[in-house]
Amino acid sequence: MNVVLSTLNSKFIHSSLALRYLKAYGQAHGQAYDIVEYTINMPVLHILSDITERNIDVLGFACYIWNIEMTLHVVDMVKAVRPDIKIILGGPEVSFTADEILNRCAAVDYVVQGEGEEAFYQLISALIAGKDGLEEQIPGVRGRHISGRLLGSTDTVEVKDLSTIPFPYVEEDMIDLEHKIIYYESSRGCPFSCQYCLSGNKNTVRFFPQERTFKELQWFIDHKVKQVKFVDRTFNCAPHHHRPMMEFMRDADTEMNFHLEMEPELMTKWETNILCETPPGRIQIEVGVQSTHKKTLDAINRYNDWPYIQKAIRPIIEAGRTHVHMDLIVGLPYENKQRFGLSFNDLFSLQPHALQIGFLKLLKGSGVRRMEEYQYISDPLAPYEVLSTHVLPYRDIRFLKHFEDVFERFYNSERFRTVFGYIGSKLIKEHTDTSITGEDRLTTNHVPPMKKYDPSKVEIKKDAFSYFCDMTQAWLDAGNHKINLKDIDQIEFLYNFFLAKGDTVAAELLQYDTLVSYRGKVRSEAVGLPKQTKELLQEGEAFWRNEKIASQYIPNYTFKEWRKIRQQYVEMPMSEDTAKVLGIENVPNVPFTVVIDVNKEVKPFIRPEGLLVI
Image (tube, rainbow, N blue to C red; front, side, top):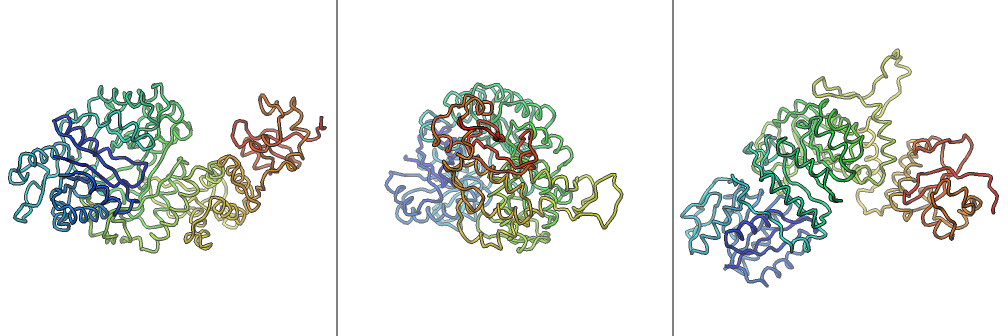
């Protein structure tokens, strides 16, 4: 029997761990499956053509919120032209709605509910034996009987003993996945029961054998994999399990990066310390906070101690060795736009490397989907994204979608870390912290402590959320949300926004970030960065030709030709305040010129004046 496993990945760089688990389990039990992966960006007719060129008896698709509608379209067409093919669906998007899927799509023959390794193998075994897999019930398998009735199990199953599932990768994968993300897991399940998520439905966690995990991680290292992304829902839920692995990651002789999802409430000094001392770039963590509003957290069955989270996460960010990605969700109960802004300010105050703003999705099988008291209106089709709530009208969600887009383009891109680090440090000083253990305060203007309060002298302060709201509104007013902009056009918008705010330091830091992020290749008069020319550099000719002086600033410097200097170095006037932000020492109080190395091999420095051309 020819069995093909497939899925529609959201991007080319993604790969399916689930399909590889099914294949490995089947192979360990004497069954052979092929894997064929597509993406949602491919034309449906091309996918259909590729499938029908193959000799297939059984076709399985892994279904998720990003691909379910297109998957159902594909299987409808496959069944229309190849009615002999048995079609099996699995994955989180069909595991809790098997009957709904079978009734909606006549092309689907079976649905595997839950973790599929055992159930899928048993179903294929039944089909090979000439049985239908329904009359003799298989746990986790629901299907359409020859009579038209829906029969089989209604259970969502788990594999109790994960040691029975083989390592999913083989040598050939390292060729096929060379330019794709490698996914991996050391555990399944989640100890929490957050109502917006499916992972905690059974509130249990199971682990793969630890010695085996070490061997598999070493296998990735030996194959020079660039990044392994753990899909463990709560990587740090059991110290006996995750601590030896984190030590292994820290001490390994590798350039590989490990991506981990960690629960901040479970982080102790041990986890904080190891993430502060691990080699730079070795580990990156994703920290889901979602909200800092106690009433919201209570409603979704989640607990956050925000002061504790700050204590655990801040040192990691300040140490700068581990990339920290933090998450918020728009559309949770009791969190209107203003209160969301306070959660945003709380997380922004830590200056994470990335602050992702997600929008609540009413996933099938999740608790929040059944919470009628919050008056949710959502997209009826996957990914079921929220459109309005009892406290958040659509107009606010629409604005926050644009807010997320602007924040993602500029702050989260990490191309402008210097300027947003500077802006952030100013905004954080003006932000009133709102601990979830205390009273929520919806005003962010405050008087610095230990000073006598004089209302006439209180300056209107801007918090981070208000600042980026202003940026978003300027973006909308310019109509930028309706057009595709080049990088330089976006930089020009940001440059003009800073100047309109009267912030020349931010404008100059943006020039610096643009030069070093794009290696000097993105320039424009409109942002004060004219193309570097020989004539401009020759204004400092005495410096560049004096190798003895220049080598004091640029180690091992020798003058070769203007072209090479022009490619790597940029000279620009700069304000005293901006120079100090960049860490330049001995800044004079007279006009000066700063030399910037676009490759960041040397720090910015002030070009000496008054030299004679040699």
